[in-house]
Length: 304
Ligand SMILES: [Cu+2]
Image (spheres, rainbow, N blue to C red):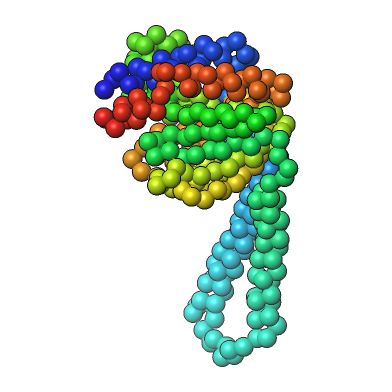
């Protein structure tokens, strides 16, 4: 049972060795301990999304404060003690028009920027690179590219998979000969993969998202890029992003897809435009090496 883990661990080590030639990209889209807000925006789309979210929260906060104060004042001012003789009228046209019209105006004010943003996020501009991300039910992501007519395809598994605790994984990977840098930190545990999706910086990347035939629903999500799209078998979903800086960004499958749901992270390595083709082939070569074959990984996962 552990032999499969060892293979995956070794493949990660090999991957790290293969990439050590290129300048190792910095981790950017990473969750922080006790982080309540959003991750730092990696795309201008995400920056807009954060702006929209903050704006909407202000609107919600002002309405909540106004209603609470009004309610408190009404309870105080019109209590039996201060208002022993209640008035008997039941209509007031100006105030009824106001409390209908003002909320309608607020809703229209919220809807306009929201729909405008959705339209922008859902419309894929002419893209520089297209990647197909396929959620596999075993559980991992497959990535497919077509670069200059050449097909590039590989699978991306969670690094250090198969261990039940962080300490166990560290000990296991160390036993397999991995160095300190190659072992995922606690923040990157269950986020680092054996083979990242590679994309060029400052380029429009179209991600076509689906799930393997006969498989289950997954969702492709990278918080720093502001993208999240369901992966549905037999249907091609789409998302796009334009990463502003090189670095490594992390996401996870965001649809409760089954037993291995928490073990299918998404790692996106954003590299300089001139390094893109070379780095992609490097990752493909390591990922498709004999040690990370799907059968070995699946057999290991299923034997757990
Ligand atoms: Cu999934």
